[in-house]
Image 1 (cartoon, rainbow, N blue to C red):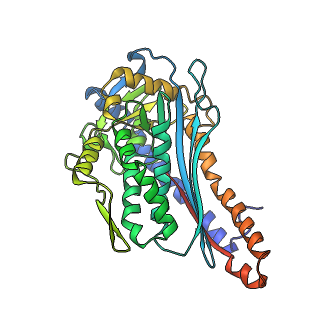
Image 2: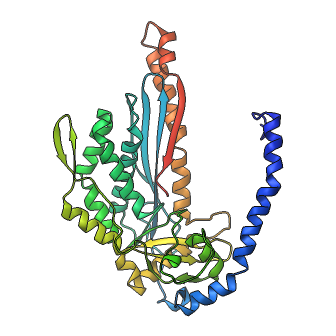
Image 3: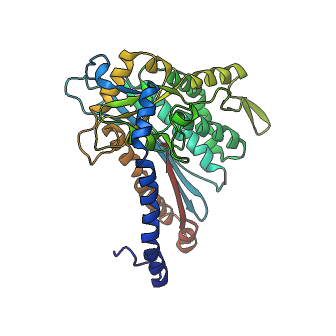
Length: 379
């Protein structure tokens, strides 16, 4: 199908007319930033930010696993068909031991009544699945697609929306929470083998720490891509400001019953762990942008552990066609396909219900899909 088949001719003309001005704006921005590259690199070097992976201890090849999740909501006329899933995919290995030759997964699917708060709860279910897989993985290095903060945010949203959610979604989230989700989260934030790799964030710790003077509105990943040479990484920097904290509801009320989720000391412990997390930027090869890598304190404070993480990540790049570590690339592709799987369930539901109803026409109208929503765990 042609790219513009579904667009009015006048809209196509307006889009094409904007291409050149937009391109010039992008080019101008890049020229301004690139023109300051030498100065910014000199400043970063003078502040001791630029380091070489080759100067770290020589590391063995670690076993690596990548974890990602997604959710889908198919809005049918009468109900919402909802699904959440998380996938763990083992990376390539030459010498390292293989633990999970086949992908591991968690999933949940259900038809529930229409509810505007469904999305928040299902995201919480998805994050619970990711945390469980990360906690169970026996590998030397566990890579998460997204930031540590996004895990907390999605769990917070789920608890906040829980009281007004559909019963089936409530039950699933509560069952997963009671299985130890919060403890898994805290263990992850203090793990000596976990790294979180968000694809995008507007944060720039290099500016926040006044380490490098750079143009406004430039994020840390872009700055690091300009400053770092292949094989270099930025020294670990705090992610959070001194007084920055995250919230987690201590309880919620379901049908008048108080449900406890965590204590104030639990939240303080979570924030202490998150406050100890550090971020580095690493550019393993010249053909990929710098990677933003969030590291728990046991990793960022140990050259041995840091070397293992960088070695594991570097070994998962072997072609310019893959711009993130290979197991995360595969996990991302797998969870993107969740919508196709839910569409099959939707069709199966329609066929089953139609075969057992005397009023097929009304039944099919009730099962008409008028909107599909979805998202992934990576932020």
